[in-house]
Image (cartoon, rainbow, N blue to C red; front, side, top):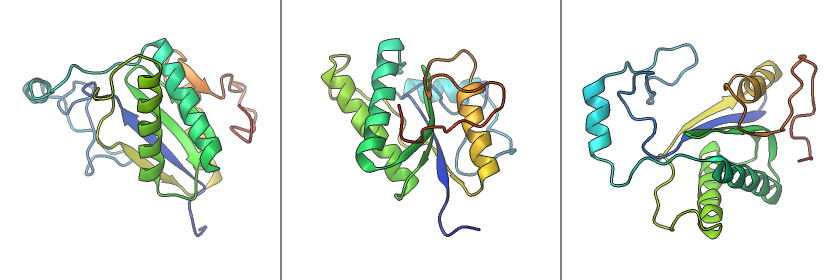
Length: 182
C-alpha cells in the first residue's frame, strides 16, 4: 500500500437539505462505510432537526452551482491539488481530488472559498449558512477505486448539473480526468 492516498473522495451537503431522519437515509461516523446501511428515515426526527434550523435550507441553483464549480477548480489550481472529478448538485457536492493536505482541509477550503465567491457574486450575504458542518472524506488508495469514484461522480448522479470534466467518456475509455486542464 502507498504511504499516502492517491486521492480523496469528498462529499458535503448544503445546509438544511439532508437532515438525519430523511426518508432516503443519512450518514454519521458509524454509518459512513461503503456498503453499510444508512441511518433509517424517521419523519419525526427529520421534522425535529428542521425545526432547529436557524435559516431556511440552502439549495444551489444553476448560477450558484457554476460559481461553486469554478471556485473549486480555482482552489485546486492555487493549492496545486489535482481535481480528478467534481459534480456540483443542488443539495450536495462530490469531488475526487489528490492533495498533499488532509481531506478536511481540502473540503473546508472548498466551502470557505465558494461561500466567499457566492457573496462576492451578490447571491447571498456573508452570514448565510450554506454548508453542513462536515461531510464525508474517504481515502482512495488504489487506481481501481479512483476510477470507480470518478465514474460515480460524473456518471451516476442522475441528470448532469455542473461537472468537471464536463464531458466524461461514457464508453468506459480512460480519460485524463483533471490532469492539468479545465
